[in-house]
Image 1 (cartoon, helix red, strand yellow):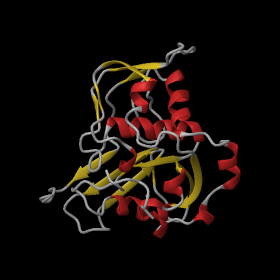
Image 2 (cartoon, helix red, strand yellow; image 1 turned 180 degrees about the vertical axis):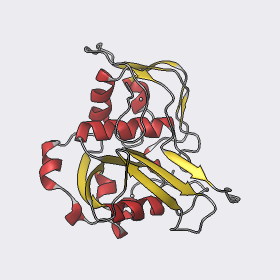
Image 3 (cartoon, rainbow, N blue to C red; image 1 turned 180 degrees about the horizontal axis):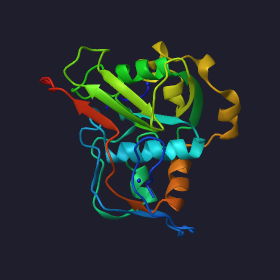
Length: 235
């Protein structure tokens, strides 16, 4: 993925939307870890739904207690690969380029969320550093549709996205500040200062650590990004 600087945007449990299936443990060991029943790889993370992307997005949403969480493909190391079995916190943090970025909460309308999803799909099916991984939504797209017209439906907690409704959305602070071209969709005025202050500068790393203390098994889940239509040639 392109460097972030200079850019102006599974317990793993059933949760809002689609999530990973889970088992929980009341106490975490000194070396936090999860058991993964699937291989974790960042391959094609800039163009496809990805288990690592889902996990990190789930961690952000759990920490921030928001309706939705977003994270862009540029946050992940391209060569990240973790085999099935025990996966430590250290292993998971190695998948991130910017693990120490803080988390910010925004109040976004359904229309802004829709535009954000379309922005992330702008180069689809080509790899794109702004491609979004998310938690709390199930999104269906038409791969054969024109740019900015690819999203067919969005469901949040089983309900259709309401363009006029306001949702709480958590994400890494640089993305909240408009990185990767998302400044054209949300503004700093959309930041929920009270909710962000409540997080007390919690980072991606602390969110992941908190998450795996309670969610100990990583399994394959239902899709969050459902692709319909014939995918055009990515060349």
